[in-house]
Image (tube, rainbow, N blue to C red; front, side):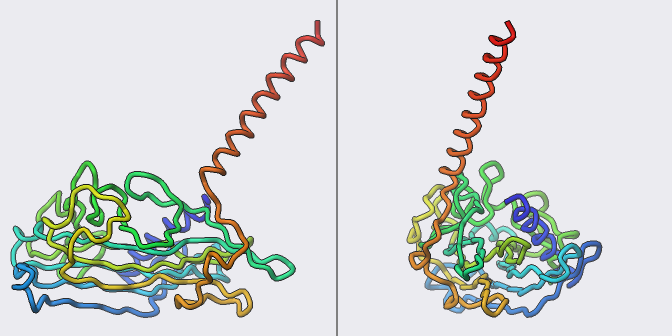
Length: 303
């Protein structure tokens, strides 16, 4: 898990470097395989009373990251920039982005007989708790109980909106909306979900679907539940995916949802991290008791 976590953190910085300069030095390099942009210009703004919202865009990059310590196998992952523009800086807080997600991050191994085992070990913060990174039904993608994307219990839902020079998403020059108000009414956020890669002992896979939606901020409740999907009607939504499922037969990742096996078809268990933690605690307790018994026994025999 520690290796996967470190790789995810490195992947995040790699994506940021890729957006900034399409390359990075020191630990490897990034190939941006493709870039796409979805644009919503709010043509029917009067029907939603949102004519101060001028634009909502979602830019997606498909990246292949090569690390110096793994020259044979790159890390694969998709990242997005979600951005919106209003007719004034004052109107920025009239809107909020909410993202929904579905799918899992899981590890696979193949035994000598060719049987593939899948297991979920990664966890992710969701609505104030740490849960397994496996959602078989759609949920709101939020760390805290505010559905607004990148909201924070201490700083609110708008502080971590970012702004930059026009057309730039370079993290070295970006500023937070809550710290310094932008000169132009354009703000953005980024999402870089887990990456997929091959290791010496198995494969880390991702099979995630997303819907990124913009709402009038007043329609988004300040407190909700991850399963509360129909709290309001969005102004617009964009769909995107981050799918990399390893095909052991062809020794490559598949990138379409059709390649994702259904969980109920697999005989491999999905790890319950609470059970794992409970078993670990029982083992520690047993070792402590055994050590105490051996200590007492040693004292008695020395008398």
